Length: 481
Image (cartoon, one colour):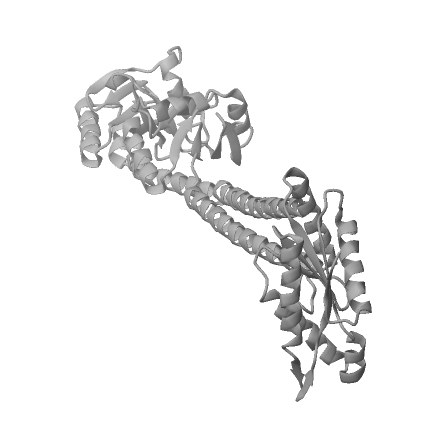
């Protein structure tokens, strides 16, 4: 019975833990996947759009300045008048640079190929010079302007974002190119500002995956190193460059990276917005731990209740199996178990052991005269009289309908006979009152004591024979065998 109970409790424990654990983990991972998808396909593209819009907005001012320069009548008249007085154009470019706080300003004449700069006439561009290819590209392009990232040879080859604008005369003939430049450092500051604003890593890469700008550009931290290692993954770069706009999740060093890429045609670069940590994942993890703690508490409470319930039912079943329902005494099945244990003890260490077999006299007549409820009352009254006059070590059971057996430990035949006589007198002298009617109760008692060769059957048979002799001799008496 104990093993069955243990198996049942173990099964319930495993069932509860498995159910709670699977439910909590499933809820956690579903929520995490949903949060990850939301960031990947909604928030990161929105951040990318915002960054792109702000970059475009921040580039509007230099674009506007370049547009003003290209349409400036002074500049066009100066070119048309054969570029006389170089100091005038140099002062003009100086004023543009100072007034609008640009990194550089320039004008190149298509007639003379002169390259004018705030510092003076720098050089003449040549189609044979690799570094001058950009000018001839601008001269041949159909659009009025372009944004180009290139080195500025007049400023120690600093990486610069140029706004190159085509200049026309009054008959719409191309006469040169003008514009202003922004240092990459100024754009770097913009990126740092975006990173603080959106709390995400923002960078620009070219088509080979080389990082051109990022919020870690001047940082030698582990994060910067990890970012460069990430961009060295050919599979990732191939995927980014396969589309002008893309949102996806990428596995890197056993953790997920949420990434959005967007091709910036003006720079010929890709704008990358990525995130390695989900803002709500910590809260989800805490919720998971809280759920598991609650589940553990519920499991413990359920197991305690289950164990107590099983124990109570087990005790009730054992009691029902070994106890007479009417009198509350041991039944015949319980006595068989107890007798086996007693006889085993007798084989190990022999002691004096006696039994009394009691039978209520004329019990059938009591039932026929007073009714079965009265008979049941007599049985309970009889059991109470016996129980209150026995030692705790003595065993009493209801053997049959009106028969009772008492096992007396450490008791020889003489002592057992005296005890039987005491009980007989107590029964005879305590009639039962039922519905204002007194019922006189007597009992015939057989006594036997354990001999070395006795088993439970022989011992009870001896007491049974003695009890029948008491019946034959007139009832209400004690006979020992």
